[in-house]
Each structure stands twice: as structure tokens, then as C-alpha cells.
Length: 336
Image 1 (cartoon, helix red, strand yellow):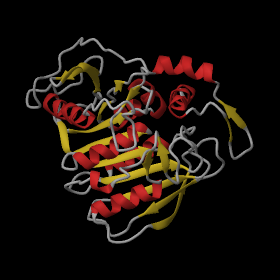
Image 2 (cartoon, helix red, strand yellow):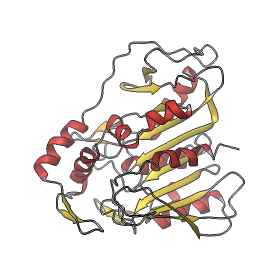
Image 3 (cartoon, one colour):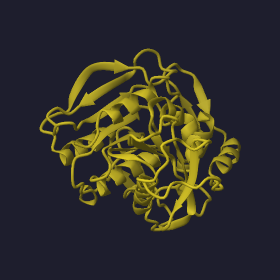
Image 4 (cartoon, one colour):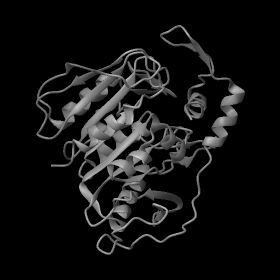
């Protein structure tokens, strides 16, 4: 699954050349292989609606559907089906909602296989959706996220409103805890997570971005209230560079500048401060390679953090700690 993600993402930046890992080993993604795999993972997953969702939260079933998932659409985008995973613990108590956003050229299904969040949705008891972007003129799925990424062909599609519509529809169909609506994104999906936090801070409690970045132009982001933010980024990421860069002639900020911007938006009074905590997020980098940078004096219940994966790349081999840790961060940061 990691190979599929690498192949799809490499086509974005032409990264079919050889790269060297910290241990000296070299890895190459061949163009022909990348093209084949990317064509597969960029295919939209169309799901047939086999079981009708409840019409509103008050009449929602107190037990999960037999197949634990339900396909639906929103009125504004009837051609973009999404599937809600419902854990077996679903009942009368409202549950958190986690939305996962795939990277450029990927799909929600492939992204879920990589992060493994559906298994955690069952184990930890949250509603879960991984919607699909739209196809660009090269037949790759994308999100129209920030000033840098990734509406490269100027479609102007309003993914921010679409994703809010999906959240609103899920709230109507299921018992959702409105204080615990979270977004997780990778690469283009990470950029889109920031866009959602900028545009819909009254709805989104917290986001986690792997290898994403916020707006380069701070005037494009005006959150109406604080949103907790966790950026996870590898120092050897040459697709969305840890130190900042540009794509298609459009700049994006560094990982450090991204979290600093959000510390400012959220009203954090000081920082950044390096934590003494280290964690092992990357399975093929020896030891606890990830360091944490924090911003003290944020408003109560709000945190802005940068987890730096020393030696981690754009699609790291994730350890078993990664996904539980990001869910822990989300669950620790409900809306006040």
C-alpha cells in the first residue's frame, strides 16, 4: 500500500529518481510502475447505496448497520458518493467524527489502508469517513486546498463547501458529538485539512496533517475560533519539503512556519518550545526518531504541535504507534 501511495505522489512531482535513506539504502520508483499503480489508485471508488441512512439524528438507529457502513451523497454533489463507517458501539450516545483526506493522485480507500483508521474507528468508537476528491485533467484525484495545492488546472471546485456539506449530512444522519469533529490529511489532504480549519473553525475541533502545509498567504486564512493543530513532517520529505518550498510556481511554508502561523491564529502566547519527549513513528528509522515542538500558553484545551520525523520521507513506513497517537491527539482536543 505504501508503494501505491509513493507511485501516485511521485507523479505529482516527477520523483521517479533514486533517493537515499539514512541507512544508506537506495530506493527507486520507476516511471512505468508509477504510472500503472497511480492509474489504479486514482480511480474513483463508486459505491452503490445498499442501505438507507437514517433521515436525521433524532431518528437515527441506535445500532450500526449490518455491514457497518452506509453510502450517501450530499445534495450539492450527487456525483460524489462517500461511505460512513459506523462502529459496532454506535448507540444513543453521540460519537466523534473523523474525516480522512487522501493525497494527490490517491483515493480514500488507499489512504485508509495506509493509516489503518477504520480499524481504530471500531476499536475506539468513532464515526469515520474518507471521501474522494475530484479528477483533474490528468485523471488524478485532488483537493482544491490552499494557494499552493493542488488545483493545478484551475478548476475552481469548492471542496471546502463540499466537505462541510458531508459533515453536515453525517450530523443529520447519525448521532455526532459536535464538539469532536476532526480532520486528518496526508499531503494534499494535509493542505486541505488546514483549509477546513481556516474556513470552518466553528465546526472543526482539531486537525492532524502528515506532510501538509497551511496557506503561504496568511490573509487567506481567518479562523473564527481556535483549532488544535498537529503537523507531522519528515526531514527527508522532498515532495513537500520540511523547510518549505514551492510547487507549480506557488510557494508553501515550512513545517515550522505552518505551526507558528497556527499558534498565532489560536492566540498562543509563547513558543515554540522543544519537548524532551521522543516517539517512534517511522518503523525503518532506528530509535525514537520523532521530536515534538510545542507552543505553551495556548487557550485552554487548545494545542499546536509539530512532530518532526528525523529521517522520515513523504510516505514514511509508519510504526504501529503512529495512528493511535494521532487519534489520541484528536480525542484530547474537543471543542470547549
